[in-house]
Length: 392
Image (cartoon, rainbow, N blue to C red; front, side, top):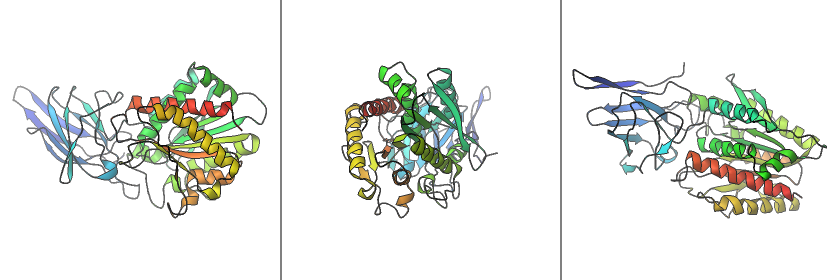
């Protein structure tokens, strides 16, 4: 059983006793309760630190025994990546909304939340767990739009990693696309962007139909499934995280399996596009792309990357989240293991015309919601379809 914290505080009268409980003993749950004061309606907490499993920035828990209509103060003891300007709140653990903006006072960042139900969930952002990934895959297959489910691999801890593919009939030179999310477990927004893209691909939109009839598309909604289920951050885990593992001898089964698929697609088809979906730093209020350094961009690849980015500006740039006109670079000055970053490995091991990029979708804004992420995924799908219409 995963470790968790449960703290209870009895409030009320002799006629009606309500026990306020804080729990995180479920997939993705993470919290350490530092103080629970039922009279003051105060909960002070921090994310659980899973030793060696990355930054302690993800938190997700439920509180039961609440009185609907009460206003609670949730004081987060944390900084940086652990602190969204607005908390995510849910009455059913499915539909999530933002709290009002929190306020900093010393080491604490406090959100005031009027609770609607006796049991309420709180999170860093709208959670997207392994169960959500399975559900997305199953629903897409059941829609009978040509999608097939496949298991990317078994994780280190034995979880089946769900994935989707569209493999239309045709000759061996069909364009091949690989899209993945959540190499860093805490970056839940990237899986919601992925979901929006998949939902668009399964829709009746003419461009979505054209894309799935023309291209071999492979989608992995969660790469670091073990840390997602554990409720750990994953970023910078020991000895390195998934996005520093793209080498000749990868540590993680998900990375090894993705590499094998990408090599196969490059050999048997026309490998065209690799997208790795992430969330950035808290101060990055506009989404942006990371690209490879010039050492990995020949003339054809550079031209294709510029064209793809321009088409993304036409769709993503019109979304409420927006898109930066500048492509950032992950080269030698970015990280000592820069060659082991996914898109750089893909650039070194696929056709010289392929576009390989990381999309960093803002998580710390009022538009970083389930609907905001999903519609951003729709815009990304449209950009991909537009790109393939005139692929070179």
